[in-house]
Length: 414
RNA sequence: GUGAUUGUAGCUCAGUUGGUUAGAGCGCCUGAUUGUGGUUCAGGAAGUCGCGGGUUCGAGUCCCGUCUUUCACCCCA
Image (tube, rainbow, N blue to C red; front, side, top):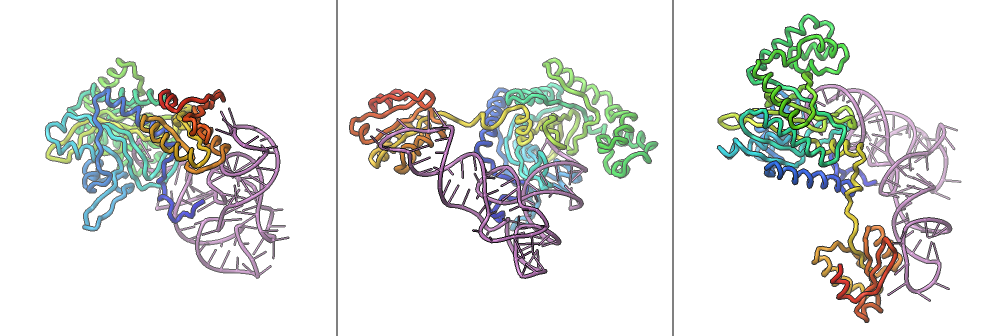
């Protein structure tokens, strides 16, 4: 093991073969599907002004207050590595005027959060996400969830659950907070210590407290949704109906709380049992973010790629299934054959053929072993005999058969 | 940030109450008569025992610190 003086930072890791191949499968399928829905890729910088995140995610949220890599650069500017993708995306769209108000973009990118690593949580992690800007529209929210379901299906994930809820319109926030506080007041003494504090600071957090006693009390009081306006409740119903219409099952969970400030109306989460305590593979919601003169409304989601991979593995879908196999291996016997094979490899590769060879005069046995391990379908063997005759031995690795062909025939048939 | 937990060859791990040159399996390399892989057999290379201090005649084994791993809390994807 290498000394860890030069190892990656805590919670950050190198992604290499063979694991890299499941990443590539996920990315390739995602790009294909995004194209079907009319989403364009957007690559924003990893580093932004701190204010971009403070303004959109919320100054008082945990993500901003205690989880960001925030620092001053050499010029004394306040910067931060992006902890999520929505803020930067909206920052970009806000700069595009009219066209930014009706855009569909996706991203596949690393995010950074300075938290203690644990199952399903890294300090550098990766998200595939989308944002669709536009005025609130239940059908847009439903389509967004449908897209997400489409991705999971394409990747081969089974056993995930979609939980949905609503935060209501901006105007509903105060009534909800007041209503919940009032409903919880009589039970104050029975709540856990954390929740007694949360009532004042962030009532919504009481709703999803894992403490059994708190959960029991929460079940007895009205849900947050019941304090919202009729319009807000109708919006949620329309989203759920649209999903039902498309054959997508969701579970209404009024206890679902999403902490970022920008959410309004529909919020949802996709969970999977294969994960540990962090059981959400994806989260999404409708939002309104004000980074310019006016707020930009939209809907979007983000999926944690590491968590998706963990869930896929539990479904028996692993990286080794996506490792590329096949191709050709060139075996060279003697210096002359080695030189000739360098030329042959160049020609084959120019034709787009995957081909490998030993770049030194090694024994045939050693070269055959490498050929086998490379997963090559065919091996082309050339020694003094073949070079002088202008031929090559072509061996089929699976069958073990081989035949001597003229070099031009080899080039024509491969 | 809090609380646990881990760190020995490329990988997975043994290393007994601190005591000679730190082991195994897998992998890797070489060979088993002429130019043929996946099996078998034989041999071989490979470890500053995470790092830094300390205790001791002596530390992979004990103590402290530090970094890292894994897990939970908090929160999120």
